[in-house]
Image (cartoon, rainbow, N blue to C red):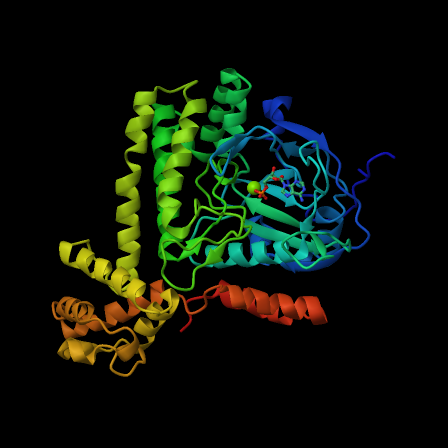
Length: 480
Ligand code: AMP
Ligand code: MG
């Protein structure tokens, strides 16, 4: 049967000005594939905010347009399953690649930047191995929630443009089965991964590493294009972007869970949300994926793993860069990470100014308190935000006096330190601290029980209201 490439007329999603940026690089980076045909198409989520970024008026794009373009994949060819390898749990795997997705197209946003539409759950490809090429509906729901939450919290992340339920029964070991199916379209800066470069090196194609890297710099690091040391500056900037991203995850209590090198973006953007979790209690050993038996991707290991992944990327980049230059770049991670993490954590405590040893001591004491008590990580900062009072300047005993944390999170040294820092401010400056607390401590955090509750309504009653409500709350997380 011939592929359905008849272009439906008047569909704004199909009339976007697609740019064949990856396609133009040559055929060594992808395989052309055909999408699966699904028995049903039910639009479960559409991201109107993303439409606006593409210059589309949401009211001009109806649900049928979404289904034609992003569920039936009518009217756009070629669809490109991207090739990549990667280190999975520390082991090199040359049998990866888009096994259940493809690059649907690339479009420039109204900001002038190039963006990818990448699918997940759109059918098998040459990289599916024995798997079905599908995405469970619950997996799709979880990715929508994670990316909307992280985006609203200020993280540079991929987002979901659409989630369409597709009416097939799927069998999975980690969900009660049969479970429902879906196809998602992800909107991100790029689907080029560390593992995309690792594959080229594995194939002995240093020439292609250079071509791909030039493309990456042109599109995602354009300010480096005319630099003499452009490649070295690129690597150092990627180290910096990754360190900043990791500091964001850590301050938000987010555990990505599967930081394999095929899930690390060359743009330093966060993407691919599988068994992630926002941790409940502060615990560096918290591990979100049930299959992560040794805690390799535990919450507290994320900075070390990001560095390890950046180190592995040095091997392919040796085609264009010296190891010595890359080591200099990688050495900047530590400082970038720790400055960004400390600054973010101090903001969560109400302090926006330059880091001092006293403030660092407060952070140390805060983490100790969170570890030593049973207080939830987000709960602590929410209570701090909601109960903070200028009265706290009067003495350590005023701190948390009208909160249950007065007993539950008792720490003499923390209270003394917090009070001491407050006493250095004018009374009139207390409003600035309150504002800082409100700006950095979300009221809504995506907890695992919240996801399960939303899913229970979908699975038992096909009721999508709680999901829609949660999405809206996650999109406005700072309203206290
Ligand atoms: P992920 O865990 O989603 O990052 O996927 C890791 C690798 O497994 C990628 O190459 C995916 O394309 C592939 N993969 C995951 N799930 C499936 C599936 N259901 N069918 C085909 N390939 C899959
Ligand atoms: Mg992946």
